[in-house]
Image (cartoon, rainbow, N blue to C red; front, side, top):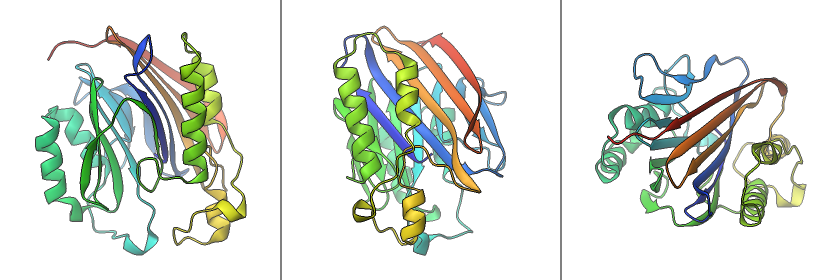
Length: 256
């Protein structure tokens, strides 16, 4: 997943508002949002090859989300799949401090990543690039392929759009959030980050919603959790940039 925006503990109805786009090669197979057969307490999409996930939630309210860290010079094909991190957290539902301590110890086994884990009440961010973990404070945040709230054009834009909308809207319209995720405006050349992939590719990857010949946004997700623990989760699936279908679930978080 290449961009995640979230509004935490600062809305009259929702304790958590999370919206995200997953960007991936079109040819890589994946399963849409569903309750997993082998771990029936997990709701999320799933990578069909490595069996991990980019975003998921459990029936007990544990949440995990992941983005890659863009640095082509550090990629190691022999490393473990980064989706193992989110899958393991959701499967085991461990104390966050214990889990992140193990992730820190084993961080060299993975290519660069950004990780959000915790519960709907208390989320944490970890980056192996800085080897720091931090609690995500109340308010609006956005994460792409650098660090949390790094001022890339699309990160700044996504954060501002979500913040402006939720601060002035009591009754959230999911379609309005999906429209934010469908923004295909490219950044100006002068504002592009330099992550080592070249100016042309930086330009193609600069929108919130990505559409290239072989790679782009495969799905958009809107997760809403009310203060009384009602979950509303919708995933919108795309094929080469074209809408395919929505998958929608609601449930009440259960005590563990």
